[in-house]
Image 1 (tube, rainbow, N blue to C red):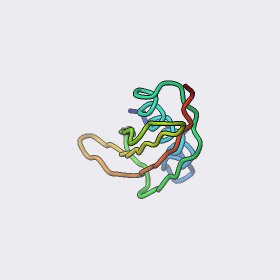
Image 2: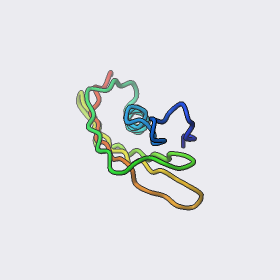
Image 3: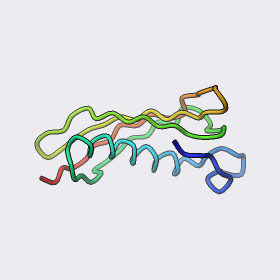
Length: 99
């Protein structure tokens, strides 16, 4: 969970896509590292689905596969305002494992 602050937003008040991408990469990375150990991001794809407006962003990551030299994960990111939650982005990431 990350509070939405003015320094993370663009001129229209929405969270900058770079902030969303960084959070997605981190959430995917932690999901994979929790099952595979040391990693480094190889690539990720980010799909921005809606403007990120609200009080906070909540991100959920899930490790899909970790074996050999590569691992993959997905993330879903939501903007939350009170009890309301809106899916604002999804991501798919690939990582190199260090074993």
